[in-house]
Image (cartoon, rainbow, N blue to C red):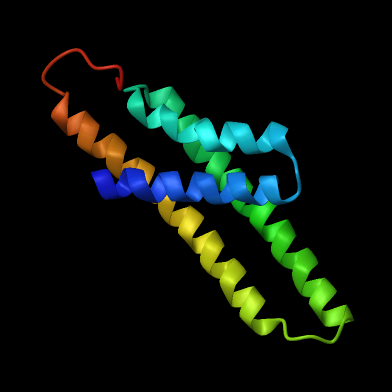
Amino acid sequence: MWWRMLWILIACWLLSAHFLRYEQITFAIPFALAPLALLFRSLYLLRLLQIVLFISVFTVWGVTAFETVQIRLEQATPWLRLSFIMIAVMLFTLGAIMCVNGILRIRKQKFSWGRSSLH
């Protein structure tokens, strides 16, 4: 289960680093702190983390990929490698979303005998 948490941590910190690059501290700090949701056994916090990561795939990485490829095309510079990197980052973030499902499944099995905040 630790590798799932690490995957989510890296995905959130990549988003945080992206916002730090553009000096948008108001977005960078929440993404840097978002993995703290993994410390709580709350279904709602983990689902919220999933939703935020899913939305960020399109609104952050998708928009960034489109804009940077457009800039590269306008400048007549190589853009194919950049597009592969951006696709990899988007797939990595989607993998982090799937890792949240794995954490939820493991916690549900582990704590199904007693009162759990997952029900």
